[in-house]
Image (cartoon, rainbow, N blue to C red; front, top):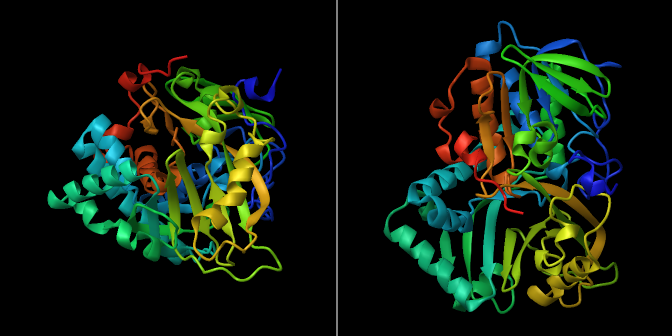
Length: 446
């Protein structure tokens, strides 16, 4: 049986990403030899979704008198999934709004964009409040267009939003073709959108928050796979590789792996594989111009994401067009132990010299390449809130590769639902994220 067909669970011995190369002391930590027999709240998954939810629950002033018992369960090591393998930036995504208007309408697009702006603020605030060293930088991001028709479409969309005085659009700026290369540092660009962004080290953010969770009474069990869940109106029984845990409330922060435990999501949240890299400058090369902003490089064939590091190196991922035709290698695939294709790596090695002024002789090539597994949904929106028809189960999963844009503020809402009994409609989250029976009927087609 191939790794991609093992019921959708995380596989063992995944590739090491740049972010994960120096494991945190909590990486393989367990609070005891076996899981406890009972807890108030169990959270499955220790990426940003699971850990931030636990952080908000245990930081809630309303539970200060009697904090609930919170148990975090992780199949592998801490943050070994998508959060530990992504690009490391979050931004106001104008292109996301453009897509949403066509599928869900103007109100949904505005709600999504305001959520992203809230996310930027919330991340900066929690890092400062908890003194987490994750190299957070409040910066800008460019969506740079290299195709004239794509640039024209983006320009017209943004201009329309600004003319209609849509609030988020006032934070976005169109840079025309005559200025685009100069402002963005790229070559032969046809225009760009500049938006506010945050760049950070996602693994260090998660482990920093996790440390606070443990300080406040949370329990952690790594290398403890949940193999099966059995639920009723009062509790959920979690069968794990280190014992059986009965949880009064259970939160599935399982993203691409959700359907392995909640089978009703099998044709709703599908795992897909992506490829990412760390790009370094040649030791004997001249020093190229410094890049301070993050990027989405929108080539005619598809987008890349590029995130400069403080040391002058780059995180560079994408190149989906290099493998999209070979569906078996990336679709419904949880195997992050191998690369997808050499073509994507070759593309990464060419981007800096081909795309940026002053990088022609920098010898910028990869020193690490890795893969990660994302959860995608038919409507390209995450499933958030109470599991339909359940009284004691919640989830936040299926982020379509955009988790860093959405998760932290979503987990504030999930925490209120679980600890205070707040209904989804009263959390302030957009209705487009809610997991409903109607959305469960809109399945991926084979």
